[in-house]
Image (cartoon, rainbow, N blue to C red; front, side, top):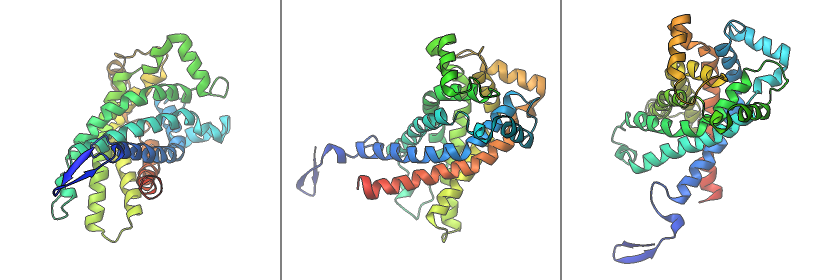
Length: 308
């Protein structure tokens, strides 16, 4: 491709082509998201397993401490990482989509304040872009979320692997079993990503403005951790019925979510929609701090050593 600059013709390769979906930036987004995803998964999976047990069987697992002790004593400490492999694979796919879409949106609709430090950034833009991102990533994440939910509620070690659950799903419902609770996934991911990306950008801006001496890496770590906590606090009421729908073997692809949400609210009260909030918030800070730090460091590594 040729571009004209001040009367001179210069040649630009396809790899260097400027655009929201140019090859270099897309590759960078996927690489950095993958690094952050693995760090996020293995940091936060034990908290997630405890949360799922509490959400799907609150009578048997009434609180965080009891649930943790029960899992470790009856199934071993490794059981806290049940479903970690499909979760890690799903997170790589999810975050490659999420960060890829979000970064592409930022390149397509750039905030002029980014190039002009005298201007205050548009702090609503990241929230809107996050909501759009949530709709896209939900589609990619759904199959691994269904397998994970069904795996985590299995008590004991017999037939408890992700592979066993997957085979059972294929035998009972076929390929459609991977898309159980599609509406539930959308309802959870839209508010989550709106706050996830929105508060991350807000936190980074506030730290840079009011704590200018803070190291950049610490900014990424703290901003990511708080963004994860606020994202999950916003999405939690939608996550409880989603988990129940996807863990059940009787749920539909679409149509089981709202009846389950209403059932929980009627039978157990509105506060039941926040079941598992404590382990979720406890997980959210370290897991998402690791995620964003991994993503930002992955970008730097990519720029310095892989594709300068």
